[in-house]
Image (cartoon, helix red, strand yellow):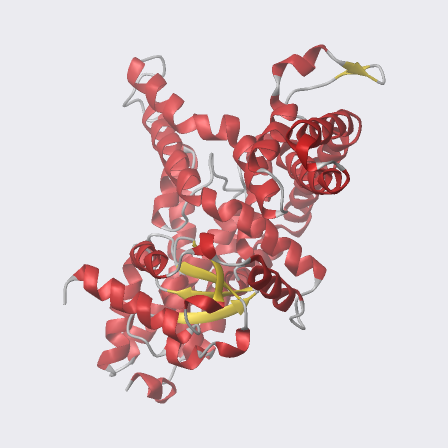
Length: 454
């Protein structure tokens, strides 16, 4: 069977397990997961989906998430989209899906907010990874003396890589407004309120406004508000005047509140997050690094790790580097070490094939295939992988390793670490591999645990 037919068949089988096209209210994908919102969760046969060849796991956290792995997920989602025309789905079904989502017994307001934030940033991941890698590699070449900083090549590469981070707020504002039921264009304008150079001439309370103050936190506040304002104003405006009055009033009110409220409040929150995290790392040191590294994989399992993206970006903006990302990157490294240990101990060929297929992605910083295909189904190896991650996280915290951009973890993160810290990051990575291996080999795995891989 050709690759195209294979992905088409898998998409059709997944759709059947979801209860058919009529049960899908919306869908999207990230680097490894097909995320589907449903009209009626009772129609889903999760067990049948889990057993499909090519499916690594199924997670139900707000949306139903089918783990397919990098590369594969894009192709299956494309075929899935041909079977499901989201534009023709009725609003009543979408409302039912939202109601069912909110009514989940563990769907606390905090978790729902994190999922909303994740949905805002997930579509931006490919652009963040690409821009981060280009920026990181360019800086490494310049710092290593291979490329003169003033050369046209360096300037061009810097412009290509840094452009996203200069105007990232606009994309965040558009996605945030859309996620909260508003017009993406108005969300983008709400973000422009923060970065417009003209505001530097405005003085409030005796101080001039600083373009960019408030960061992505402020942008999120303004974009979410403009979405709510747009919806509320539209209800009170005659349909014939909606296109003129609704966006104008929404922008005017949001603009005033931005400069008097959202910008200063966003700045205080951003400062609190960065200073608080730095205090935790400075006071907690090695112990804080261990806890942060060891607890990251459970966040990946729930998909809530995407909610950390604005924190990473805020650290980069405020400090010029991100000391959190190298610590959390050890989560995937502990997983890789655990996988090598299982591969060394098991005699089950099916399990060895599963590990062999998922390890390349794990080494490149995409740990979900290993999580859902290997360690989580086995149980205890997932915990020992977390312990291995904690040891590597402690090392990264002890030596204050940071990155110059956000991107995929694992080995590719080497390109985002300053030249003088590359060796330290690599040592921490190897320590996590070794610790994950040792904990799993000696305490985390026995071959009889892998009966389902027979």
